[in-house]
Image (cartoon, rainbow, N blue to C red; front, side, top):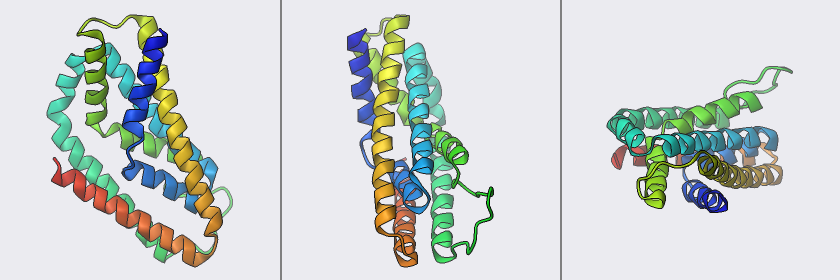
Length: 207
């Protein structure tokens, strides 16, 4: 069981550590809003990773085979969502809202919406379940994983992803405090949008 948990930790860090559009989005949210919003987004990503780890552990090769044919359409949807977020972020950087009415937060700028939005966006990546399925099958030589080992693996994957994404959110929050002026926030918003747009294009080109 300890071995399964450690394997889950390694798998979770393996899928979470590479910096991509999700990390940039979490950091940008923390910088523009608050650590609370960034942390909610981070937990949304970790939840998606945990769900995919559970699906891969329970379904293995069968699930990976079912998801693989949909990789193309899901990749297009993910790229479209990323481009939309990039455009929205750039527009908000150039046209910041003068005053926010108490209790009203739009887009991903509330903890609940940040969690749901990043959960949905991360779930659009079918490569994650294929990645976890391959690791599970390689580690168990194609044999069925026991319930205790499955729970330990999924817990390890979730904790690894959550710890890394929260670190990313904390880094974004520190950047936000360092760049509190309108110019600093505009620059970080535009840079974040440009990187997200570039990564969306990369998703399309590597399909």
